[in-house]
Amino acid sequence: MSKGKFISFEGIEGVGKSTTINHIKKFLEKKDIDVYCTREPGGTNFGESIRNILLNNKSIIYPEAELLLMFASRNQHIEEVVIPKLEKGIWVLCDRFIDASYAYQGYGKKVKSNKIDLLVKNFTKKIQPDLTIFFNLNYDLAKKRFPKNKKKDRFENLDNEFFYDVYSGYLELVKSNKKRIKVVDSNQSKEKVCNEIKKIITKTFKNFNI
Ligand code: TMP
Image 1: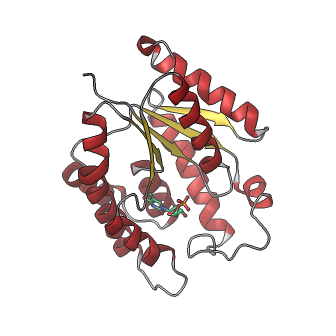
Image 2 (image 1 turned 90 degrees about the vertical axis):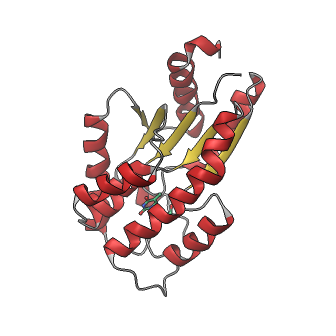
């Protein structure tokens, strides 16, 4: 049996990743592909506990401690979920992965990239997405989409400057990983975004006759 494919989805908050991921899941399932959706931080019981701490407004967490928690969650997720699913031939769709650590903790919180490199090298079992979709929407546009009545989490409460840095960080990551990261203009209808992603997936995995 061939291994499953690993696709990650990235972008700043408010770009509409979650609903799109569910559409992509259905699209692939119609092509008889087994699909598993997951997320980071989280994706396991242990990881979801860490996620609660990370997103809780009451938590006081310094940038490097935050980075380590992201990787504790990620390491568990890779061992418990990602590798076993891929080995069973299941495709894994992951809402955020390693790129988010470079964008948020690196570019956003100014943790040095060599510290992130070290964690990637030693604690991620060499797992890299086969394809990453970057939902491209700048912060000023994304912010307009934030639900008005939802209580903001610890990240959503950060200031505009932080998100400008995260967004430009993502653009840098796109530039240096052109083959893996594909950009989708998210300033258009969800339907159009979905169709673009479907085309990218069909092209990237042409051997699978999607
Ligand atoms: P989510 O609500 O989009 O699932 O993401 C939770 C938050 O965690 C989001 O603000 C981005 C942040 N995050 C990081 O800061 N570093 C990471 O490595 C990951 C995976 C997420």
